[in-house]
Image (cartoon, rainbow, N blue to C red; front, side, top):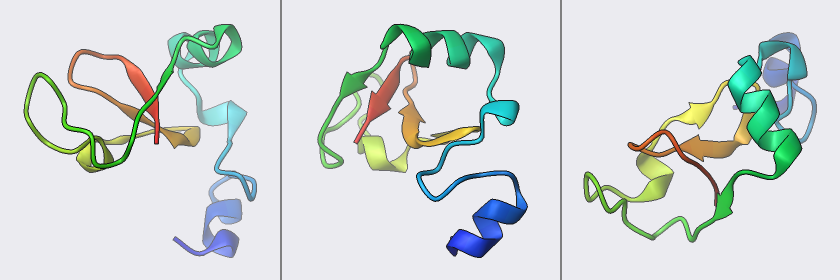
Length: 73
């Protein structure tokens, strides 16, 4: 998505929009409760690549895994 479009939705140039974060996601980010993963790594639960999992609303740089974990690609 183009940067100007993201900014219209409240995101900054880095994909952050703190006002859109769910409280649980904000806490996980604050605590560093996310893992790094290669975008080509496969999810142990569904077998899809992590890049195919949904972005976290308010933190586009994170993906939500099937088991409700957060990964940064």
